[in-house]
Image (cartoon, rainbow over all chains, first blue to last red; front, side, top):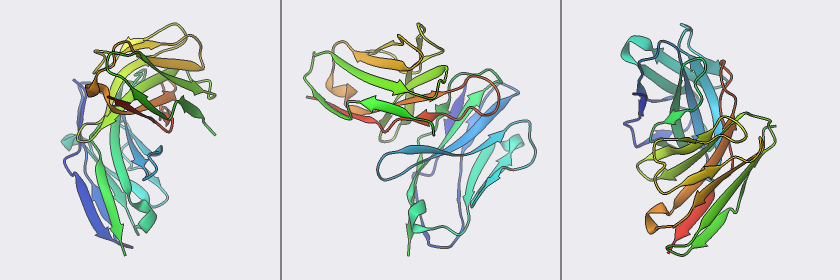
Amino acid sequence: AQKVTQTQTSISVVEKTTVTMDCVYETRDSSYFLFWYKQTASGEIVFLIRQDSYKKENATVGHYSLNFQKPKSSIGLIITATQIEDSAVYFCAMREGWSGTYQRFGTGTKLQVVP
Amino acid sequence: EAAVTQSPRNKVAVTGGKVTLSCNQTNNHNNMYWYRQDTGHGLRLIHYSYGAGSTEKGDIPDGYKASRPSQENFSLILELATPSQTSVYFCASGWTGGANTEVFFGKGTRLTVV
């Protein structure tokens, strides 16, 4: 069955450093899509970045990048040059199959960026 | 810009009462979803819909019903609200199929059942 696990409950980093948030997933499907979302202090949830299972190249958007390790069923989110406004809760999610309808989410990792 | 609007944003309900949470999307997406967020559980899928007239059970459907009368609107119904349903509820919309299927979330509804 489809499952997404985030074991890091919270992380604190110093501003301008790099942080990696972990996510492991379980699926029987050969084709799947992995997503990261950010929930700000106001509660709003926004999409950040996506990795397609059939792509070997790690996705990158701005100062967000992914570390996709398919043999380990792992998709880490890397934030470089962190800023105070990166403080938020980050969710990993997965959708199975090319025609899959819904995404299943992990429990989230709370990131605090301190000066 | 994708838009998903939830109403009400805050709701206090009495145990045993009926609660309806509404969601409207202007993205013309075929899929819509209801999730609830609780500490330690992340976002859990309650119901979802492929399109007008369809509803499907998610991972935690017990105690909830859903209604999708049109492409734009998707409601979550608690026929007999219980304190355990106190939570923050998020509606979302998205496409089926293909790669560009990130979902777009509403701002959430905070429901308190007393």
